[in-house]
Image (cartoon, rainbow, N blue to C red):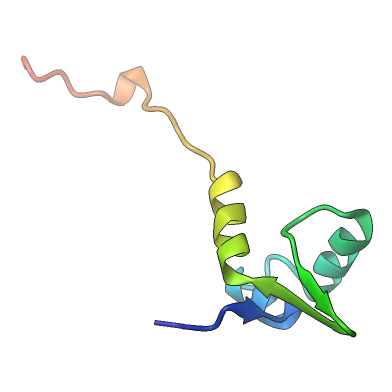
Length: 74
């Protein structure tokens, strides 16, 4: 289990398997969208707990199709 509390932009990109690039994170920061971050001097850090909350906020739920439900009486 990873016990890091903060991730760099590169680590965030790795966390999302490269689907969010470091450049995208930079653009999002400039536009004030995306996950919240902390800036200390020149260092930009993303709290892991904020990323986990952001994941939950962006989670998509699917509904079950009526055609896929199995009738128990059959």
